Amino acid sequence: MAIVGGAFDVKLTTQKPDNKEAETAGIARMSLDKQYHGDLEATSAGEMLSLMTEVKGSGVYVAIERVRGTLQGRAGTFALQHRGVMSRGEPQLTIVVVPDSGTEQLLGLTGSMEIKISDGKHFFQFDYDLPGTD
Image (cartoon, rainbow, N blue to C red; front, side, top):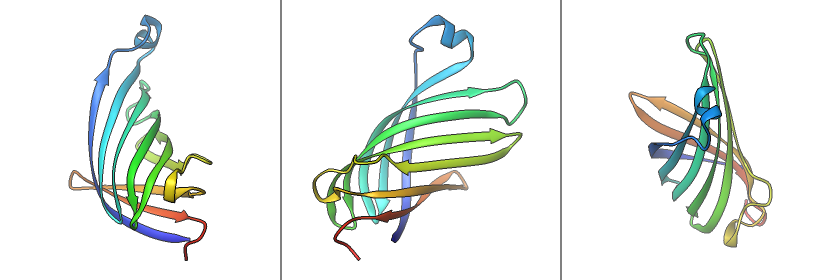
């Protein structure tokens, strides 16, 4: 298991819901564009769905992003799946590598990512395993 980290920039762009029922239900859709810096030098593109409840600080989001770049010098792509739940201001976030999504030098990649936000800046810690590495 390797643990790496760095910062990332993210741009969220609101998308029009696919149907009126989703919009009426309060489901929001956004596109994600990210730039990772540090041990993971990469860009990513993805989609996110979210819903906030009528209780302040409670809601949920799910997202999938495809990451393309280098992880400690190894080139390839992989996908991340996000599941975030906020219960009255208490966050729970799980981000995992989608099984068998690694390509090129990232074949067999597994792991999970944590995100921290401090003073409006985004940081990640990525715990991963990659066959053939220490």
